Image (cartoon, rainbow, N blue to C red; front, side, top):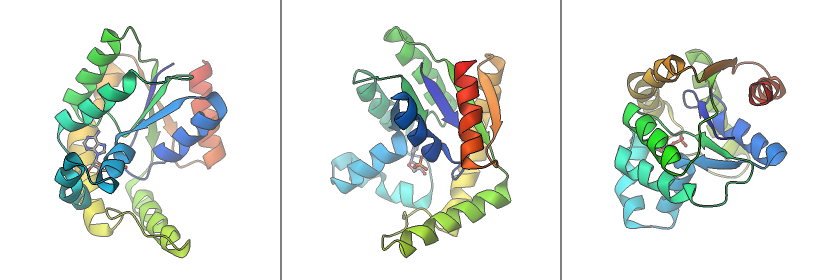
Length: 192
Ligand code: AMP
């Protein structure tokens, strides 16, 4: 069972993906995590995307489609969770084609619905929590790049809601409910 978690930055995609990894042995494919890993290990690609990520803009479709393509041949466990991918219509088309070429299907697209004011609070909170825990906040968890990230979401990613709705694949859940309630809603969709 392969699913997409869709929603703006801060909607809880990563948190919910982690739960599905633990409870259903699914494999989380987060392009954001892959890009951050590329930066940490200092690859050419990592260097190329650093400034774009810190500004909150999207990196090119080519880069993220390549990252996903590499992972699809790996261990699939209970299925893939696409977290933070696709984020543009060309990425959505590419994912469909990649899955089809490997004899795989896309079984659900789950939107985590959250309102904007709540998102800003969550992301600012996430940055503060990281610092309080003795770590450092993500470089793009600040209000400046958050505005850009939200705008990128509305301009480039939100059209995917219509795209998957029209394909009959979209289910929306209330992302503002408690973490456990959101998890229960997602499990309900997967077991339907
Ligand atoms: P995330 O951790 O999903 O919020 O991603 C962090 C950053 O990585 C984004 O703000 C983008 O700069 C980049 N990124 C992650 N996934 C994608 C994607 N599918 N397409 C383009 N850029 C992405």
